[in-house]
Length: 297
Image (cartoon, rainbow, N blue to C red):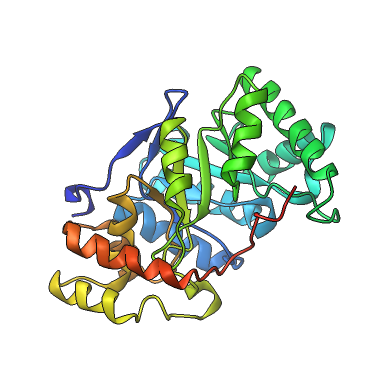
């Protein structure tokens, strides 16, 4: 059973809110029937955290799934943890409030548990333009007001570098609860992880399987990964998730396959220090699959 997994736990965020360690990502899930079927299987398997974004264009479909499935599984709204994200085109002041309300309406919710700035840059502004800093600062100030007003359970960021985080921490009374970033053996930043731990910011990984969402299974098929998987009688995906979780990094793997949904939350083994070192060593590839925030001013 999934509940027996030593990794199926909750992280306490810096505002006291508890966030599940393992959730379901919904990137590119845009078919109503697939979302319903996937969420049904996920809730049965023990998932209680679901990650979406304005940019995913599926918030309305998730509403329909939750309205049907929560009663079916005997669950209430407070039993699940919902994350969505502010699109780069909605940075600013009143745009932030309007975008959040739009997400609530689409999701059919009175609040979300975690609202993230999806990217440090603003749409249609060049990466090296100082307006990015000003828009980002305005956006975070607005989000802190909304948080203080009790409209959102917690606020955080996604794709933020240490520099971007430093700016927020030095100018705001609210520290982001979460930084959701690309993180897998081919691409990881231990300085960022150390910084987040020192500042009580929970790191959450996306692209845990490398480029699989882009039909690139190079990481899943890497000999180091497959050999470790064979040793533990596990899948490559399970090895990659355990690797992140043993670094105290939350994960939101995306799949629509029932068997993989169960496998991704049923993690009943731990990696040895030698295996972790071997997987860490794959970082020499420095292979990034998603958007890169480093150039954003």
